[in-house]
Image (cartoon, rainbow, N blue to C red; front, side, top):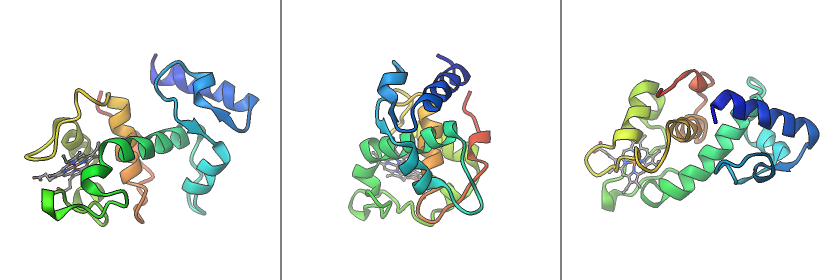
Length: 148
Ligand code: HEC
């Protein structure tokens, strides 16, 4: 299902329920429970109100990070020197060029595994969007980037 079709579908679902489970709206693996109100609280700032599709991506990115990345980089992005995983808080790559950041996650580098087989392009954008908007980062233009 294309991103725009999925977004439209989810928009219809969201219009019907203010709190809803993605599972009931989508057959895709975006099955993490999604609570619109807590997502708004977590991500919206006085400068930026994310749209529904963006909130879903950020929340999805949060889940992807805890499942696929936190084991090495730490739940709070503190890194793990013992296995050579750099801290992601205040990280130059996350604050830097988006294309490079996306490609690094997809292809891996040295001990950083490639996620090309594990995550699709949309999920890679989601997790990058998460990294670029936690730990004091605010990259509001992240969804303009694409791996396609
Ligand atoms: C097996 C451990 C491991 C896992 C799992 C892992 N990483 Fe990494 N990551 C690394 C290592 C090691 C590096 C340093 C690579 C290098 O430059 O040599 C790295 C580098 C990075 C960097 C660049 C930071 C920098 O300063 O070089 C980012 C961003 C990153 N990882 C994001 C992620 C994301 C997102 C995930 C999950 C989708 C993830 N990593 C999963 C080990 C891991």
